[in-house]
Length: 603
Image 1 (cartoon, rainbow, N blue to C red):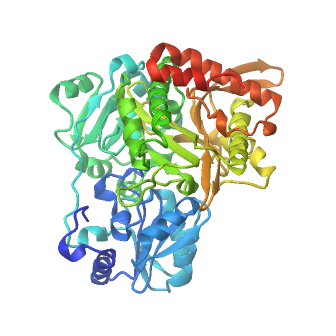
Image 2 (spheres, rainbow, N blue to C red):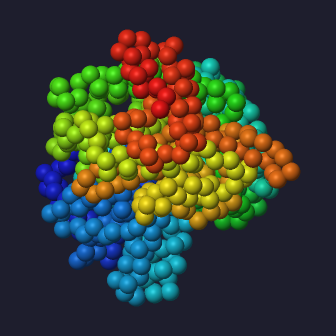
Image 3 (tube, rainbow, N blue to C red):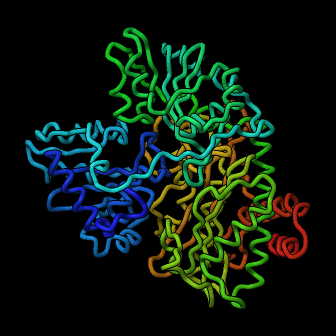
């Protein structure tokens, strides 16, 4: 597989045909290609973008299944319009599912494969839970599952190599907790679980634990690696040459040795019988689990680092607040430019991306965008994961709504913000939708809740104002956000997910609040702030938390239908804008300062 196709694999039908040839040669009747890599990452290095390369569907989530006479991509409602456009003419069918957690592709396999037939999926890129779900469907029906084949490697095309960007230390000025202290916390949890060793594959866990960062994955400052933690030492499995000698020496002082990335599986296979190993069944692949030597006691538990990194320390929270000020100042400069030029000079959705990234580059500590900017005008805003391209984008002119979802990676934190602004004069219907979404954002932002509340239980607070008007949205309300790490992290999730104990809200977690309304072919509205879990009050009824809004950027008052706001909501918005003005004024001047002052006046 490669991004620059060889002549005989220029088209999607040619690539599917090549996969079918590989299947036939291996005696396989169907092949499942997930959107995944050996680390179960959300954003994939080119080497593991097989589903995208084979199908042409560029959404971040989706499952491709190919048999001798059928090819289909299962995608949830966020991607339906995009998938229909990208799959058109390929011979690949869009299989619509309601949510990302859907198992309809498993149902299809059970109904369409016959006893004795074989399904192949690369065990090195499918998670343990997903593999078990597959086996639960296939085994009772007599369908054979093979996980020892990487059929993508059998396609005659040059496959991208592992990324070789250097690994670097997170600036100690912004990494207040040492790697030695973090390792000690993980080891304490290992002891409680009765595990002598702990194997980690998730890239953000590894980057956090070792206070290292990289550039192997778009938008997320992580690097390709595995790690094995023992009570007196740790091994970091990474491609040779990615860590320079001086950094390797620093790691060695903390009892961390380097090993070749390719040796992780053999090391697991050589663990002594009778020893114990902790792994997270949600965060390790089937292939890695199968490589563990027989006789090793496997302890299944969530990676301790997943919870630890979600709970930002007071020092980290302080850095994040300063980062939000810099990000807010960048947005003031951007919006001042936009207001001065919209409906006067030619501006497209691509222009927005260039300008907003350029504004962030001027701020101290900026490293990169935290995800691909979504700039979507009018009908394009109805596609939650829309991305403008050179081939297909809109010019921003006339009247309507412009939705901008963007973010930055800074050495002192990660930002993610969505604002919708008026272009020309918004309609009454657009203002109504905007205000209902704003009410949802404010309603959840004002919540108080007992410490340990399972995060999905909060989801309805943001949806209630929309439900009252028989409106809903198909994505989650909020995701965790890392500290100069992944813009999407767990374990908390404010969504319709089935609540589980590991989703409990704890002090220090940073989460997005982003309800929306999407009217296909017309417009979309989403208003997103990041919030921090902070202590509220401890009394006879319990220990309560509340949200501190971290994001600092005005909300467009021109889009508000004041008749829909309650007194307490107007007070919240005025207080928020007063805070934004006070925090950002020292960082802006000129047109940006004028724009900030004008757009934070009280209602």
